[in-house]
Image 1 (tube, rainbow, N blue to C red):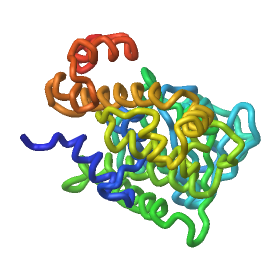
Image 2: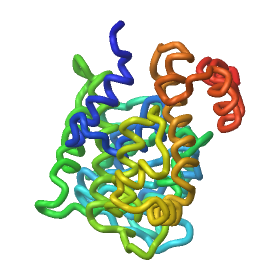
Image 3: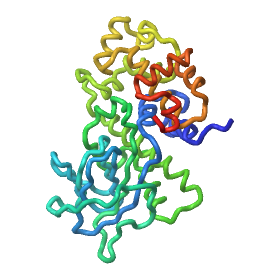
Image 4: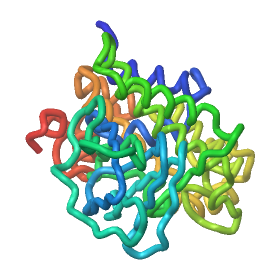
Length: 329
């Protein structure tokens, strides 16, 4: 049986992200958090302009390709955005986008849907003040990964010469694709490029050293901790294995007690509790993206009993696996 497109895309993203067959926890987090196809549009604005975006279930982003604008969070200082800057709102927070903070806001049109090419939003006349790539990722809020809760309301990645070349490359490719009428292969290329944009912007934020203070509990700190990160990689590489706390401690090169204490402090739940959660989260992703039978998925994530799998899945998601897959739950 051919590998389903979404499963194949996930593997290609792991390779493009620089890890190949080495399991990468951040890539897994993104693949399970996002659902459906991302949305994006190329938007051109001339001053004065001001648009208000209400809170959303989706994680929004804005990339400035040309010109300047201001991102206006409701309870924070305006953020100046210049050419190449990326702004990401992982929680779908309400915000404004304007040429200057004093410009009155108008409500945004209907929520963005699909991919819009060309000069969406171009005014009839006048030199454009800003050309932007705006879009959103639909997130599975039924079982959000705790990493998303640790991210700030707004992530701002300023363009800097020589920094994050892979992020810059993804931005350039997206801008090129969207500035032209759709070309052959666009339906496959654009969702993958948008997924890469999400991965690369998160990688850039983490690599800049944000929130990696060892004294701070949370998922950001866990991914920077070499001991806990080693155990997380082991869990994500083989969620179906019959892991024990002692075995995971060996992966982390810590004693059982020291490992359990450190893992719980940073991740926010004990190792085996996280293992169960990740098994079921992985199962939910497979149910959405692959055609494998439910019993096969149950075995893949470590459940030898279909009844035990169904009971555990329903406890976490509130619906049986079959209903979850069909969308009737």
